[in-house]
Image (cartoon, rainbow, N blue to C red; front, top):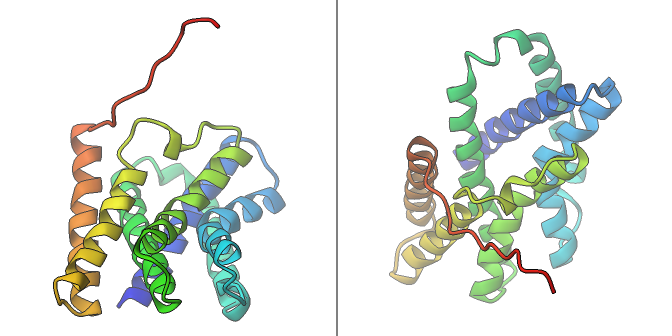
Length: 203
């Protein structure tokens, strides 16, 4: 089930990334690169930091084709994407929690400390979007006041918490995914925000 959700998530991420590239008037090479970086970049950065090889998209090159197909599909239905905005907000939230849990599981398999496990989840969930925003010359969503990275932290914490209480990996995955998704969707619905740090005094 997690694998199916992963495929859905990377496709959705590739589609939204393609639209970001389109708003910057990129050619199709640029569109594909932005789609790949967004959908697969978080896992790639995680693997580089943890020294885990080969990369997921090297072991499964079909992921490159799937995400490229998602980018092409986004181009074909771009005129209808405004009507599908709520669907893609949901899929983006789903992708965040799925990527986070996958990142946690990989670090857990490597027998890394709990802090690193959670950070592995956050990097997997958020880094692809950061790369997309940087390449598209936007302020990354991660660095704004939205509850995004914090939702990823909470998801990873719940996952480890359920396991610490004796729950199986399957139950930890289900509970963390559901609660993390609810948190992110509520944050979108009610525009919950993290506290801002504002400093304007000149040195």
